[in-house]
Amino acid sequence: MSEIETINCLIIGSGPAGYTAAIYAARADMKPVLYQGMQPGGQLTTTNEVENFPGYPDGISGPEMMVQLEAQAKRFEADIRFGFITKVDFSGPVHKCWTEDGKEIHAKTIIISTGASAKYLGLPSEQKYLEMGGGVSACAVCDGFFYRGQETVIVGAGDSACEEAHYLSKLCTKVTMLVRKEEFRASKIMADRVKNTPNIEILFNTDTVEVLGDGNGVTGALVKNSVSGEEKTIPCTGFFVAIGHKPNTDIFKGFIDLDETGYIKYAEPGTSLTNVPGVFVAGDAADKRYRQAITAAGTGCMAALDAERYLAAQGH
Image (cartoon, rainbow, N blue to C red; front, side):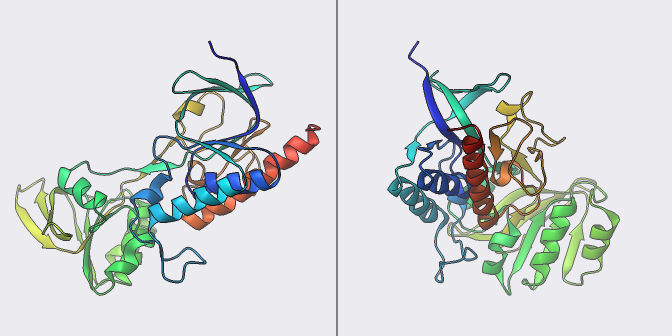
């Protein structure tokens, strides 16, 4: 077995939260080591255009922004590594982590920025247009602007689906909402809001058969009524999936306090502290409310500052 590496600050994950934490930690001379994880750059690598991040007046692509954030972290000598952490042990005074190739790391502080993954329907046509950035999205707040004056479809039945449908209704001429069962899972107030919005049409008992397109972008959705069996095509240029997110926190179970859906709980609201001293969280691994690049970056800053204070208090 190779020797154990001991470091001041380990950052797990490489979206806006992880890279921002790395920038702050590196400038504080904490010599952070960041493991990029399964999806280097995080969810933003599947986002074609980012127009709402301050400082980019002409917008920027998600992957390009992540390349720039990584370069900024490296400029301050953050140690950015390809690979991922597969196991942790926070049961003792030493925070132990293992990489996918079995390397053992002991970290004085850890910043968890593993993010969350949007759930998709899993249709080949959906994945095709998602990957090419041609009309499939899991974030109406991020991408709705591109569909101003157009017709869109949104799949989902919960509060966030209703919220996103209502958001789209202000930008789009028509929003068709596909609900798999015969009623919403959302709270009554949210369900009533979409029911009372004139340009939202709700189709209950409806499944998506295929996302239709012309090879360049989405042109419609083929849907099927699960009760009658009837199929029909709904014209649209944007197909939004709002069936939830799964936080990437499984490896922390048993050590870090998680809520019922797996999001990390803050030990103190308004901080990045977890229930384990010296372990902090940033970004979508704890944020099920905002889920924006700018809020993730903000919490990355908070986590680095909290980690710096923790180390100082420990006499490091």
